Image 1 (cartoon, rainbow, N blue to C red):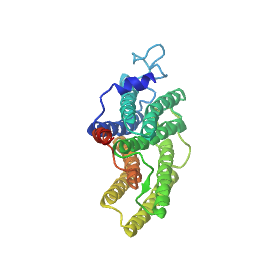
Image 2 (cartoon, helix red, strand yellow; image 1 turned 30 degrees about the horizontal axis):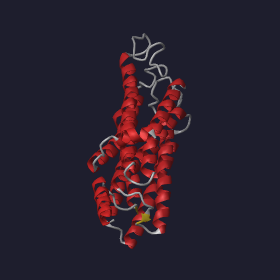
Image 3 (spheres, rainbow, N blue to C red; image 1 turned 60 degrees about the vertical axis):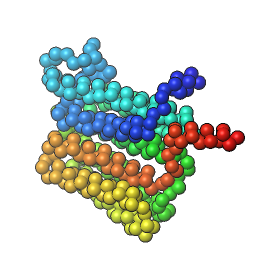
Image 4 (cartoon, rainbow, N blue to C red; image 1 turned 120 degrees about the vertical axis):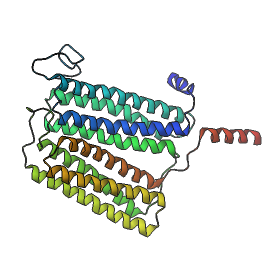
Length: 324
């Protein structure tokens, strides 16, 4: 392929470069969700009244009698950040592609392809959200589409740093099943959280429709699923204790506890204080950290073999040639 030939001409990225690219992908995917929450809590969701243009006939904010200039620029700036996220995703794809040409296996490249594809999908969903005048369920979908991309970015980072063999689990079968239950509960928390947001005071625009449901009941469901998540996490800890899990896995496990409990406390404080704007964005950041820490635990629970560096593969090839 012509593209393979072009990518092959690029210098092979060092392990530190691969790690940096993976971390950048995680930060970009998580960060766009946080900046989106800033748009919402500042009431700037319809600062740009249409999509892909900001205002009819203009791609950038223009003076408008009915729209505050600050709201326009907040929403426009968030749209521009999508371009940065796409750029980071493309860099991650090119990096993974270059590594793929020297390492067997297609998993790393497949993971990398999901990021730019997902960001484009996210941008389209964002446009539909604006055109739908920020109906609460479209805002919920817009947020939820971004959550798998954070998860996949974590998997991509680990893909750069590990081998590409079939996974060998470091935990017993019961723990593997519980990890799946934990992940399902995590997404249940996120989905329930969007309903609380949908019924809450921050809709992105004062005139947007809100979810007509008791916010107290929705908040109880949201917190109840978090309790389930923590209970499952506790049982996973017991299985790891019985199995004699390695220290690195325990560190990942402890990180999940730290992030999840902090997020739960933040949610309680946020609700008690009447959902102040700053805490909303912190809660969205906490959601991203829960996804990241849970994905990191999942990755650490299995072993795909040691990372094979470009330099080592070259040395091995030289030794085989000399032996022949």
